[in-house]
Image (cartoon, rainbow, N blue to C red):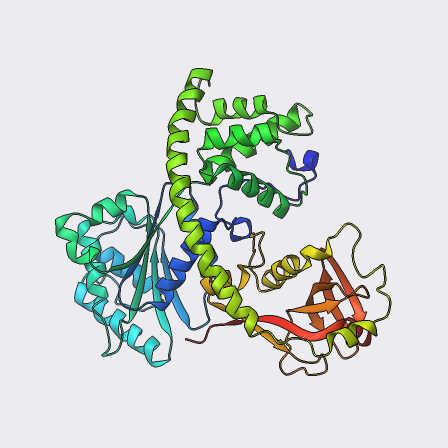
Amino acid sequence: MYCEYFKLDERPFTLTPDPRYLYMSHQHWEAIAHLMYGVDDDWGFVLITGEAGTGKTTLCRFLLEHLPEDIEAAFIINPKLTVVELLATICDEFRIRYPDGNTSIKVFVDLINTYLLDVHARAGKALLIIDEAQYLSAEVLDQLRLLTNLETDQCKLLRIILLGQPELKHKLSKPELQQMAQRITAHYHLGPLSKKEVSAYVRHRLSVAGSQDLLFPASSINKLHSLSRGIPRLINVLCDRSLLGASIQKHPLVKRATLVKAAQEVLCEPEFNRNRDNRISTVWGIAATSLILLLSVLIVLYNNLILRSASKSDNIQAQPANTDRIMSDLPQMSASWWPEGQSISKSRGMAYKELLKQRGFIYNSSSDITFCSDMELLGLLCIHSKDSLRNRDHLNPPAVLKLFDSQKKEFYATLIALEEKTATIMLGNKTIKVPVRDLLSYWTGDYTLLQRKVQ
């Protein structure tokens, strides 16, 4: 295959929902926020819709990998079921024993209710996620509604998240499902990627597979966006086939012509003539213009909210005492501390990304201003404080440390491990092990770490 030719560790564009390859666009962060709301909310359904191939299942896998320990989750991927089959599948997913051959709805519901009460008594939560929910029949959807009637005086016992294609929303608008629709407390529609996001998406997947090169020039990315319409699944299919074609042709990059040839093969399109491209461009251009106008308004409102949140966050950060005196006493910064070619001015964003990576997430935003606000979408809180490396009770790696070099310029490093006499830190993309006494020479005591929200 092409992996050896392009020096890749593995194929980067497979169709399996591997959370490692999840590219977190702004839309995906919003979708994750709604999914986390579904985990915390106990009064209704959360609905995530999107065209086939937009990444709903991958998002769901990502969520399942990062659920709190107190969550008992059931995940149903084949919803073409009768009511009895649905209840039996829920029991199977929650590992609830039931009599062999049972077809009584009452028996299933009673067993599920007993299990949910037991989870609640242990201060836990039960979560049911159903993928491809557009295939659920009206009868099954109504049974799901009835399951949300299982409750205590204070809360519902079962949280339900439905993921499906746009027709699911249309199905729920029917009169016979009005009661079900009224219980949807949050809905988010996951759309296609923009041209800029397509480029970032391709780069991200190649990076995870071991390549630091984009392999797709700008002209190919533009064509890829046009052919795939920004749908991640189609992007994967086209990139996988075009990388194979480029390797056979011994090309170092995927040319536009190679991409078009791949599309002819995998999309069963006999040709891509200029008139067809122009018509597509015109239609998408009009749609994109309208979308951009709408998004511009939303982004302005969103950024204003983020900046206000960031301002409040900055107010709680402890300022280094006698900073000028501390920095004037610093020894000359060793050249080996900061990797050549790395920008100290970008060190804060790089340190935050590494901090989240150490927690098992991938953070793709280019702005460190929105970091703490974005973390709230994942149920995490930024804790800003001031302490000493000698105090092991509060400073638990990973954490971001604020340092100053001998030129009085601040920069940031991620503390990965802390031992008695040595500390392991990440500077840029370089891991360094340094004596604690040396690190203290550059550190003022300010640090940031992440903690999960207390519910």
